[in-house]
Length: 296
Image (cartoon, rainbow, N blue to C red; front, side, top):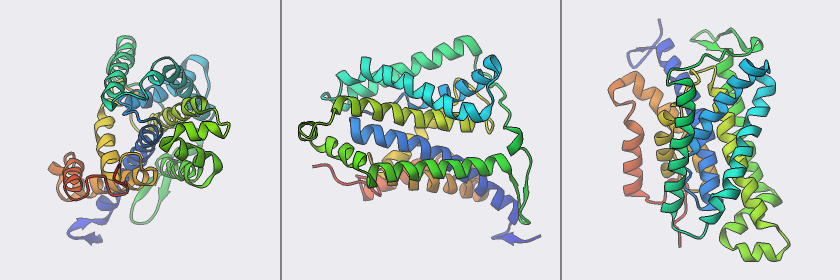
């Protein structure tokens, strides 16, 4: 059997695949956080809860309404985005000119409420959510077995992440968003409805979390606490990539997933702490993150 550094190749590539899948979820979630912080100046601690709501939305659509995976892949993010729009209009829009701490405390409270409601109805044990029939089975690549659904998760995540990057960095709408971060009054003078743009931006960013949630449902079990297990790592990734950096969140999310996979292979005890060691080193060497810019 072929080995790399004394590790059997199937084991090494299997762990790298798991790391790539986790990295795909990290990238989607940190992308939404970066968009919200970069445009709205809000540290959205409720992002893990929206990720969980997306997974539960897909599970509920299937079990209560008989709506399968593919329609739910569109409907669940729309449901989460609509919930986010209501929260932004009713609560968050009042905090844009205040310190980051107010937004963090409000979204932390929202996360506790949302997760508490789901725990009350469904408990903390996970609910099974099977992958679609078209993505069952897998492919033998010679050096490892690739489950079809997990391959789909990686491809779908990368397409959505880089599509969002193109939208923000290469379109007129993205130019308005970036300009609104610097000077909202100037953008309003061009006839742009800035409050509506902010609302839709928040709805879109939390819809990304919902999309990640329904993708994750068949990989993990659908549980009210699934966001808690993810959000702290995702915040560390946003810090490493640079607060508000779209490209930084994508590249760092995938990179940290691969680092976790390698660490789990060669030093399993350190796999859960490697991301925080990297964050500490980055903060010492480059406090504004690998892809971020110093704030004036």
